Image 1 (cartoon, one colour):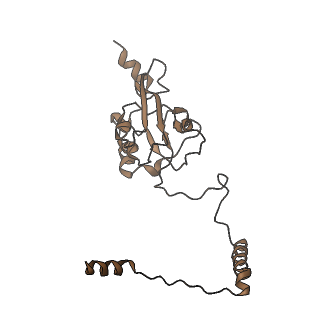
Image 2: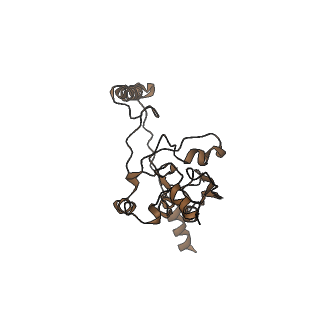
Image 3: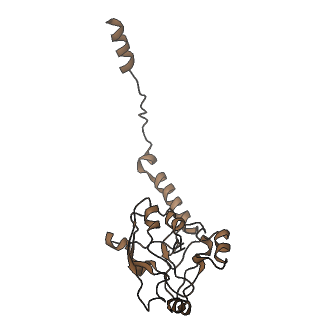
Length: 209
């Protein structure tokens, strides 16, 4: 029992040295500390500010940066997406949803394949910008660009539909930096179904009996 009391005393009998030094008159006025702080503040007036006036001024972005998505069109302006769902399956955050539609006669200039994405949505709050949707797409229809996702006040405004994702015909987005040399070489191979473009004459010939 006595040993336990000794151990208890050893564990609890700890000392902390506290400095109780009295401050001088100048220190009590805090003038040196205020002067030192003002000198530091004034020194920043002559330095180049680290901030920029965004969006008027933009910093350089690395080619490997993964930003806002884009749904690409082919050389004729038709949407490349066939609504196969590969991107949605590959997405680990389950941020992509879509519904399929069937191309009607006369819409060949709008959609590249007979099946297309009638609706296509990405939840930017769920998206982790990993790029797996880009890698899974067999039609090179979706790419991540160097564009930033705009800030919004409402959660519903972060649901991006085709109106924000599909590139404009008169404002194409360059994604060559996102394509490897092997992919670019593959696209030059003629005779592959993947590289065929819509040809109305060829389609009409195929329906003649």
